[in-house]
Image 1: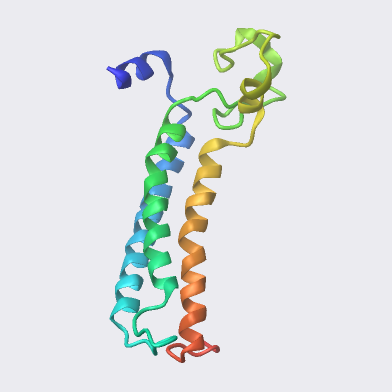
Image 2: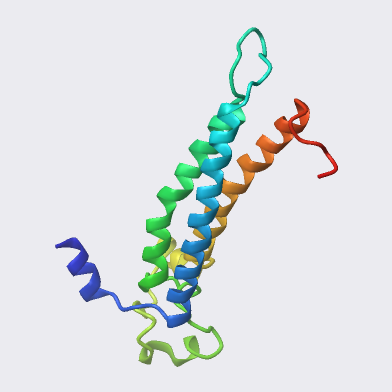
Length: 161
């Protein structure tokens, strides 16, 4: 029901946005696969005990948690890439070309001057799908960097790789 209602009231985004979604999903899936493999490798190591506790460092668990969080963001990323969501930058509206046409363009849903606050901010904000992609990529890269730092600290990796 809800998906049908969204599909009827929305139109598809540009072809390039949908291709961007497919390529990004492939790269993200591979990155998550390697992150999970890295987590398994870190968990299987014999880490020196810190404070009497032997086991993997916190960064290892952080890697798994943030990787899962980045995977949770992917359906929202797909939704904003495939469907027009009312954000001008996300929906491929060129401000000099398409936005100058005003209400004649089908890309601007709300042409009223009464639009205020959050609605106006949503409309002119940065591209939503690319922002979600940057956040998801950061959630994979940050724990990778932290885990590498801990591995260097304990001598599992050398600095001069």
